Length: 42
Figure: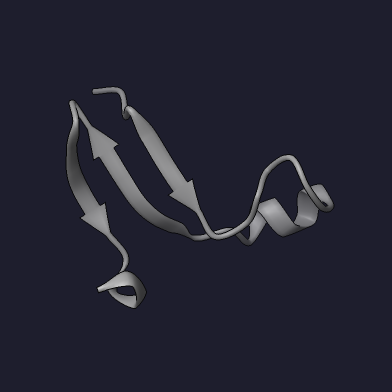
């Protein structure tokens, strides 16, 4: 199953790659429906 998009805590286009390794998934949307939301966004 492919995600429509995944929101990360770090922008993958900015900053060093080491920051992206530590990035947390904030939300995942599959088939137009949010399937995961981090507790910090609740």
